Length: 225
Image 1 (cartoon, rainbow, N blue to C red):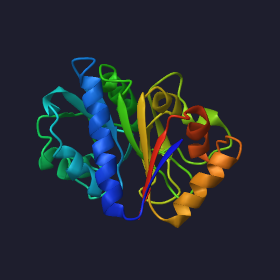
Image 2 (cartoon, helix red, strand yellow):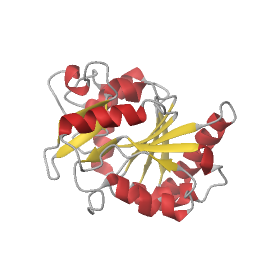
Image 3 (spheres, rainbow, N blue to C red):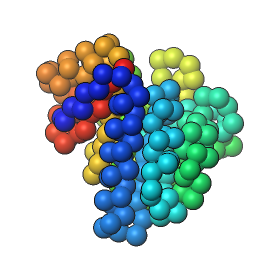
C-alpha cells in the first residue's frame, strides 16, 4: 500500500478529493465515460463536496455506491441519500447516480435489479472505500471464509452488519478487486492500528481489509484526523 499521512482531517479530505479527481480525469482521458463508486458513512461527508467542486465533466461520470443500507431512500442512514446531499447537489448535478437499493423490492429481487442496472457501468474505474474498526470494507464484514464475500459470480451480495441498520447490499470482494483506482480513507488511531495489523499479518476473511491489502499493493491509503 501507499500511505498518505495527514496531521488533520481537513487536509486529508482535500488531498483525497484531489486524488480521486485525478483518477476520474485520467479515466476520462482514456474512454468516453468513467464509473465512480463511493462510500457512505461520516468521513465522506467532508470529502465529497470538495470532490464535487473539481473541474470534471460530471456529465460523463456514472456514480454508484460500494455498499448500501437497506433503508428507505430518504432515510438519514441511506448512503445514496448522503451522496445526493454531499456530492450530487454540491456541484456534480450532471453525474448519473445509480443507487444499489431502491427500497421497493424484496432482497432477492433487489439484488437482481441492482445487478441488471449496474451491468453497463461495472467494473467501476475509481473507488472510495472506508474501513470499520473491525476491518470491514464496503459491507463485507468479518467472516470465516472468503466465500461469504461472493455470490455466484455476481457483482452484488446481501450482508448483515453487527450493528443497526443491519441489512446491507454490497459490491463483492472480487468486484472491488477489479477496480483500477482504489482509495481507502481511515481516521483515528484505532483504525490505523487495525490497518497496520492487517498489513503485517496473513490475509484472512476475519479481517476483510487484509484481503485487499495483500492482493492490491497499489492501494492508496489516506489517513488523517
